[in-house]
Amino acid sequence: MHNNPPEKTESLFFELAGDLRLSMLLKLSKHKYRLSQLSTELDATMQEAHRNIIRLVESGLVFKDGEGDLGLTSYGKSIVFLIPGYEFLLQNKQYFIEHSIEELPLKFIQRIGSLQNSEIVFGVMANLQRWKTLYWNSKVYIKEIMSQVPLDLIETVSNKIQTGIKFSYIFSKDTIIPKGRAELLQKIGWVNQISKGMVERKMINKVSIMTIFNEQEACLLFPNLKGEPDLNIMFYSQDQNFHEWCIDFFNYQWEIAGPFDDQKLNET
Image (tube, rainbow, N blue to C red):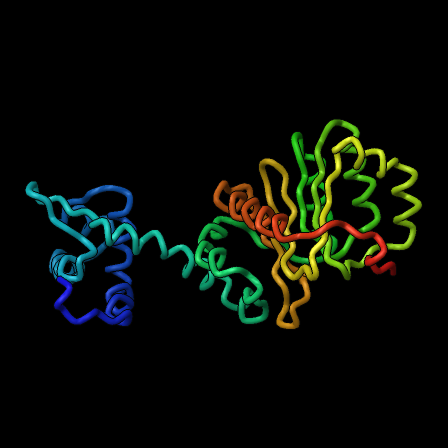
């Protein structure tokens, strides 16, 4: 095996390029099929199905067992696991032409397929309302990485903290805060909530990717090409994989963040 010349990546993409072959791989990722079943479900002739399956078998993606059933090899399963990442980027091609993921650590880019089962929310007001609803829906915690802080969200999250919700957040050193924030925080006893451990906070040099989530739903915003979070378009989901991605990204940022410093915030 080690004496064979290495296969080039383009040979794999060539095998995945055919609509029928890709559909076969996705079907076989669910369970085994007879060739006739695949042919019927994919509305292909037996001749087409046979020709394409032969190619997938020869490429090492598919095997045929002793009973004639077709299934994915371990290698084939590994390839199929990576397809959602390409699908997510393709489905949102125009968005990612105008937005950047360069700030993401490589390990999160490699898992970007986890974000596939999500909806896009358009408009600043619609996004703010979705954040507020997310706050109200929380029963255990709220966590977020923010670059801007709308004043009315402070009151909303404070009301939830009063019910026992734990609030953890990360600001950038240039986070934009509204006028009146200091007075409002004093009014609602923010310092006391911090001392009780109901609120915990940290600070990083720059926030380009924002996320807001509770124990069951999550929002995610990527930056524009200037590296600034775009509040006009947001991904939202209750999908477990999407949620786990946001949790892991928050924890990653939390680990590298430093102490919170109110004096570095910018009031508008």
